[in-house]
Amino acid sequence: MSSQHQIPSYLTPAETGPWSVYLEQIDRVTPYLGSLSRWVETLKRPKRILVVDVPIERDDGTIAHFEGYRVQHNTSRGPGKGGVRFHQDVTLSEVMALSAWMTIKNSAVNVPYGGAKGGIRVDPKTLSKGELMRMTRRYTSEIGIIIGPDKDIPAPDVNTNEQTMAWMMDTYSMNEGRTSTGVVTGKPITLGGSLGRREATGRGVFVVGCEAAAKRGLQIAGAKIAVQGFGNVGGIAARLFAEAGSKVVAVQDHGGTIFHSNGLNVPKLLAHVEKHGSVAGFEDIEAVLPNHEFWEVNCDILIPAALEQQITLLNADKIKAKIILEGANGPTTPEADDILREKGVLVVPDVIANAGGVTVSYFEWVQDFSSYFWTEDEINNKLTRIMKDAFNSVWEVTEDKNVSLRTAAFIIACTRVLQAREVRGLYP
Image (tube, rainbow, N blue to C red; front, top):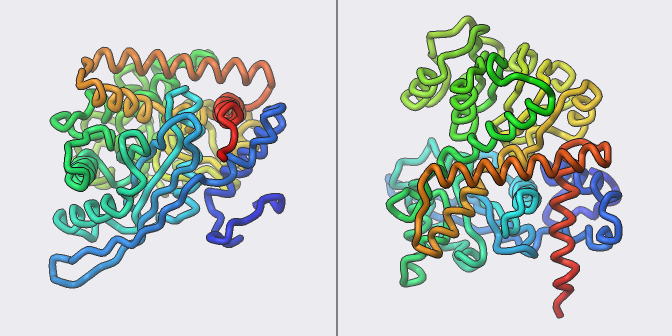
């Protein structure tokens, strides 16, 4: 991490992780902020960090403790908004970075939220459904002092889903003594969830992918697609690209990497993953590739839709794609960004590419407050308009200032956040 940054006492130089990537991104945008740069340190410090102990009784009667986090990075433009992930490798640095990227993402698409994120350091596969429920409920109770429909609204992320959100909503509601559907988004439809929310992130990736392809003169029909991660984001994006006539030639997840030069059967693959949990064992393929060869696949569009820091100095130069659509948060390191730009690869950054999820979460939140719900077509049309407008605004800044799409998105987002900070002033 750059020596100009003061490392907070709760991190060490060896543990800055994704947070240092975010800080470098802020450094790159600072020269473009003009007089607002006097407020830039605001973006380098989370507003609030809560670390909680999450004890539960296991099915066998033993007591287990898990480490939980909720970070609110910035709330200058509205309440915090961001997912909750359950993963054995969750760290404070990671949650800090993810909350900060949520600040940028929400501002880039101009929804009235700040950035937040949460997580529990646990492998959910090691828990029974009952244990998972008890852990979720205890975590919700522990962070309940800082979340709420007008404070901070959690949503699903890695290894969490509609059921997780239902447990969180119910726990918060029980503690409040009233039903509060707006405390989380990504809920089941029966509890105030929104039509189109489950597919929203993947659909957003597809929408901005089509816009980016048009800018580069690439036809979507016949384009070769490679996807890392085949869950709610990568799987939905792959399905939509396939329906538009693209060939999904390679897919990688935790079960391995599969390849078919004429395109995988995406509907069959989705059904296989739903049944078996990964792409491993899918038979309608040409080859199973070593995982490192996924990045060398000959394709037009590459969609990293798994975890952060996947495209690095080690593999960026091997990528053959013309366009990268960041379905995951923070999948590309700054050093890899530079290599890809030199190669002429168009990187559509996460803060635009995967913002469909939070956009429809915003729709869900609005619908919960009004108790009036829109049709799926209305949702998808509103999402498409917002995603296209956001992408084209970023594209204009890219061309005007001759910067990457990522830097352009940060210019727009940071300007909006810091303008809000400046006009609000400091209290007291």
